[in-house]
Length: 393
Image (tube, rainbow, N blue to C red):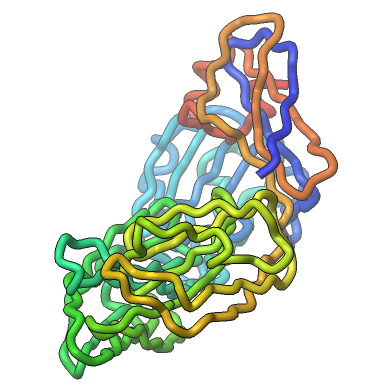
């Protein structure tokens, strides 16, 4: 990934940098009457997670005693059960009792007149939001030789979600069977990234090829997504190419899975080639061979694997392989190289970031002055971006 660098003279104790790329989105909903801006500075809208809370930020401090039960200030259609609490004197939060319905639109009326003395036509503040429609995809990375005993292999894969979900619901989506017998699946969940990695351990290679059948049904996640795939477990006496695919991140390479680890005594130069590409570099990790091109490739490329490639047990492939791979162009993207939010006071600071497939990047800097930091932290964590117009410029 190509790196771009920019030097910015900054003298702020705390700042937030927002990068604006080619695409900008806006809510399709009609905004409320502009007269409400004197009373409400921000509210939940657009598409949100099913596990999100609904917030309203007021332009002035409220008197919570006027509201009584704050949950009664909200009227949802369809109805939502939950509780409301004051995050601050100018921030009211409604927390649903359970996840909201996937793909549903909710209309809300907030009883502003019960909290403030407002004109009659502003007593009820209408707004709406939508819940992300849940969906998921299942990807199988392949089978890997990760044990001292090469008779066993591990199957790895990943489930990627459109919205957050509880781990126990995710795990009910997937089942695996070998010769009609259910297999135990081990999980690791990254709930923030909406990614769940699964693994099936200790798959014994026998004297014949076997297939693990992976089945997924989305009913536990309130979606109709379903499907299945079969994964080959090679016989213990065979040596073959299992699969080959392109990995794009964080660097581009071709991943080739063999049924056994490769011999360490052979040179792969000339035995594994990408047509028209010179200076390939190879990294062997157990039964995976990574082929690194000297520069990023695009379009269709032909991978050739010679039949004389040998395994750790000196078995040869015998038959050559020719595989056509697609190197998709990366979408325009930009991200910071490092994390962090506080910069020391200096006359010449460097903020590195990575960009791909972009001719230019617009950088917007919002400076939050030291005197406004307590107000900023009322509505944000240290890396937050909420209501910056109130505390910075």
